[in-house]
Structure formats: structure tokens, C-alpha cells
Image: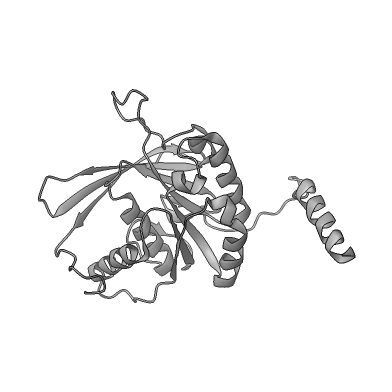
Amino acid sequence: AGVLEQICFLTVRTWRDGDPIIDLRTHQPKKHPRWILEPFIEHGEPSILFADGGSGKSFCALAMALSIATYRPILGTPRVPPMNVLYCDWETNVDTHWQRLNSLYAAYPDLSRDAPIFYRREVAPFADSINVLRREIARLEIGFVVIDSVGRASGQVDGTEGAERMWAAARSMNLPWLGVDHVSRPKDGDGPVKHDPYGTVFKKNWTRITWGVEKAQAEGEDQLHVALINHKANNGRLQPRQGYCISFENEWDEEYGDE
């Protein structure tokens, strides 16, 4: 009982004290590139990829994860050695992401299929799962995390309180992460789409880089043209628009697992 009481006391004191104060005059920063994945993911910073449903944003996020895990410029240019990646998913399932990942492998036949990308199906809000996630991040030596989607991970689709809890939990990972989110629209449903993630304005304010995804695809067409547009950049100028073409050469088979 005495040991447990002492642990509780030290835990509360550590939480209240927070990180130590640092004298910036004597601080020696660690040398590292600005970018994890240029021009989308900065070192140690959160980024958001937002768009309407069906725009290919989750597919783009997985392609970025594969670029980081393999040091191959599939979508973006890696600037650091390969990292283990964790994909936290609130919207679909492991089979869908397995199929998407294998379609990316099919487009790059020389790419090794042992990329260290780990998947976790999520239900509870991110902040409620962070203790378990931090243990798994340490065990698997994760260097980069994808959160898909931010609205579901927050526990509130458009509330500030849920977003604040999620950002605080994500900050405690001390890792760069990419959030996938939906796009903001006017409350009356009319007018142009806003160039912000859906919900509270703090999502944009707390994120260092935001990218909007726009697509062009005709009905029945087997090519998806995607434009990634940089709407916010805290640590430098806005990056040029990025354009990609995703071709679907074969339909998925009726059963998952078939190549």
C-alpha cells in the first residue's frame, strides 16, 4: 500500500511539473533534416491531409507511409532512413488496407514486400488508448504514426474538447504524425468548400502543415487524378501544388486475399 501511494504521488507530481525549463541560450539542438517526407511531413511535427470522402486521401496517406517505411519516393521524397510506421484506423478494416498496400506493391515490382507498416483497428478515442499505444510504439520501435480519421479519433466530430484531448495525447508520443480528416463546409451546406479540416478551427491552428486533396475522375474512368494543395505551413513558405495520377488496371477480386 505504501509503495502504491508513493507511485501515485510521484505520477501526479511529474504530471503537474511537466517538462523542465530549457535555457535557449545554451541549448544544442540535435542535427536532423527538416523533412521526414518532403514536402508533406516535417520532423517531429503534426500534419493533416483533408478532403471529401472518396477523394483518395486514405490511399495517399498509406502511400506516404510506404514511402517512409521503405525510403522510396512513392508519394513525397523521404529525407531520413526508413522508419517503422503505425497506421491507426477508425474507419475501415485491415483487409482493405492490406489490399491497398498490395496494389501499391504491384505498381513497384522491385519494392521489397517486408515494409515495416503495422496496422491497428481502433474504436475508442485516441486519448483513451494512448497508454496502450505508447507501449506498442516503444515495443515496435515506431517512428511515424497515421491517424485515420481525426474526427473519429477525437471522439467528437466537430467539438473543440475532443480535438484538444486528441492533440495532447498525440503530442505525448513525441513523434511526427499524419492525421487524415474530412473537409469543412459552410453550416448551411451551400457555398464553396472551406480550405480547412472539418470542425473546430483549432485543428488547423495546432497543425504545422495542412494539405487539401482534390480529385478529378469521370464515371467509369479507371484513372483518378489527385491534386494535393498546401493550405498552411508554419515553418516556411507554402509548398507548390502536387499532382498524381492513380490508375486502376484491375478490379479487386470477389474475395480478399486474391492477387
